[in-house]
Image 1: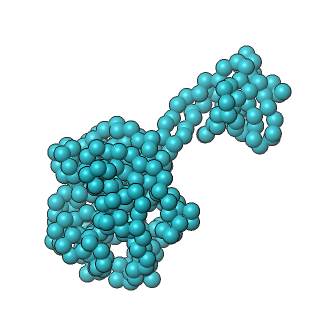
Image 2: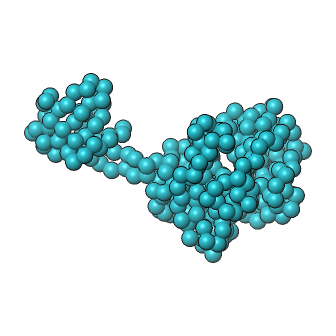
Image 3: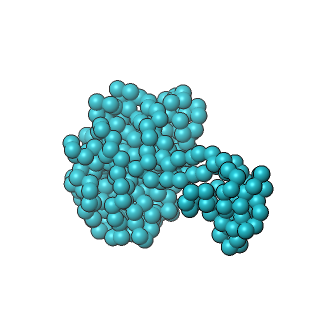
Length: 306
């Protein structure tokens, strides 16, 4: 439930919301500038990139040449018990920075430096890294090297970020099949100097990437006026990290952010995004109902129409 404050003791909401006090007030979700660090894991281990399973029960990291799978004892809480359940060594290229898992957890895509390419792997059992095999599907990204990879929900569009402020679109004629990928337009990001990582909101209306320029160690947020159309992107805001952020992932409801760190503060940092608080309405408060266009005043715990 979301209640909108007007001014002072005037409150705005629906007729259903008027009767539910005290109530939870939420705001600022999916807004990176509101991020507050609340925990960390893997201290001292440089994490090239990360991917969080949509239900928050499994975490995948690239650490050097190794792709690792971890289970979380508490969903979306990296301070809970993390158990390494499987590890696979990636033989292609040098630095492995791009990572995406799609098609219901049955496909893995890895971007590498050195070969400047993206490689597709298949998992026979969804989300089980021990069942992985190389698909022999690979595309050259035609960039310095792919540092971030994201797909739309249908697997027909791939977005790839690269250093020097690059972000590019790819179309797949067969969903999730990298062998059918065709590169489209490359765009230059404003306010991001040296791009790492990429996370796109599931509705395609926002995305986040990391800037590792020495004077701009931050997470940058962009909005798209048209979903998945990079020609409509615009810079929104940023969150200064203070170390070397490699990639970012955000919980499906926009309330938590996870950042892979590769600098002196290596590991994974977890942030709360937005805020949640309890609203206690005082006598004399005026409530305007947006669905009925009526106003009410609270007195001795009861609402009376004005």
